[in-house]
Length: 180
Image 1 (spheres, rainbow, N blue to C red):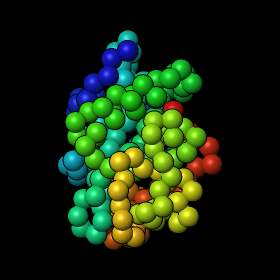
Image 2: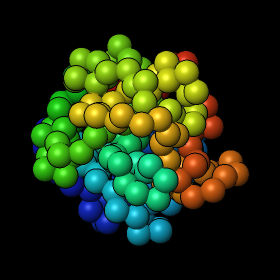
Image 3: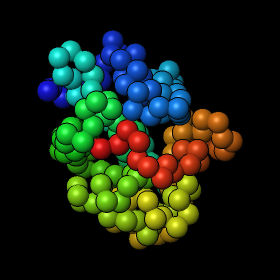
């Protein structure tokens, strides 16, 4: 297994993986394709096994008003037949060691049981617009001392209405499909 930055020639393979990892949903595929189409600065890596992409992770800007205050981790996906083998965990560990990631506050809306293993803690500040009680909103390296609602890139607005930086997932899945 090799971990590499996602390159444009592998965009279609990453989209196919996201469709498999999140069956019945087009949200994650649309989100990543919109990042690429709109030229957004996204940090992306993939795991490659026998010339196939088997896992994917992305980080996009998080906002306090119009200023960048960190990064959002989303999505993290593993091809179904490779889940529960530690591949998603290894990809996340790798990403957290990369320069652009390890120097930033990272936010994630996900399964606390999974993300706490990597040093993430439940977030009391800022508030996530998609998890008002922050029950599934976690962060790492977060020294926020003021209350605000964290913003997302407009690409998260898929199927929703809202201003730039206020979009987000349709809803938090009860089961963390595709996430490892």
